[in-house]
Length: 198
Length: 95
Image (cartoon, rainbow over all chains, first blue to last red; front, side):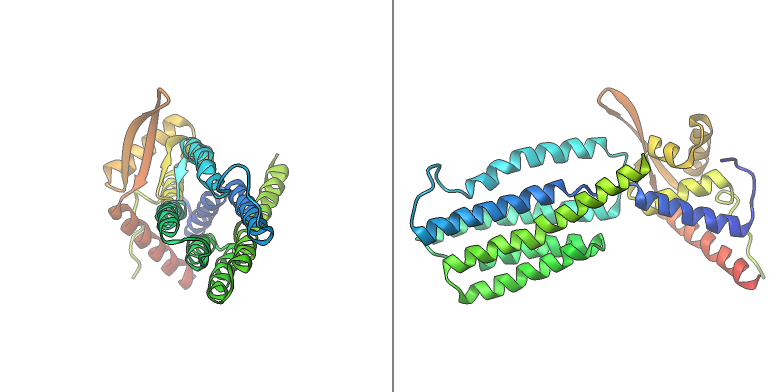
């Protein structure tokens, strides 16, 4: 690219081309979304089977897995952040939204643990699930996540009127529609883009 | 009456740098080099020109023991870019 002066039309073309290049630079892999979606679905089903068939999971509270999963999540997020050559506005918004969600869900889980003596509505949890999912979908213009966020809120509303057993199935469905399916779509898209660009 | 185009921006490489940086919060020197296909020397000169004009903020850090240059567009840069695009549009509309 030289520094010679050029026409107005060429200027506009160059601006569009560079903005396009910057936007296409990052393709979300969807791994975190898939892992968390699968984990929520798994934990919800185990918890549901515990409630339905009144058996105990031999390793304590199954939801502890979500706290354990935070360790690799933090590790990979830091690693990915270090390898990035640029920071976009969208990524910054999404990062802070998910940090806020993480802190809120952490406090909420302790609060609910303290309050409950068995059987408590999952409404506030699914309501929280919906917020970062919806924002991420809206900021990245990714419809499956917008739909996933809305699904979480609908499930959260339904859970006001359902028992714990049904709540857990709604929770599994939330994990599926908000994260697992969008994660799979993102992963498929990523693989397609990387295979064509090689 | 047409306004003159900002001579700092009306250069291919400098305009490419500004167009990339307007789309992101900040970017590494290597990112700009990859996207513009410019040589490191030329890119460095043009970044310095933009920095001297107050359009860019350049900071140097170390990442894993390697020097890293981060470029970020300033508010003055954003206004200059917007004004440049506006003038460009006025030219193309008349044509």
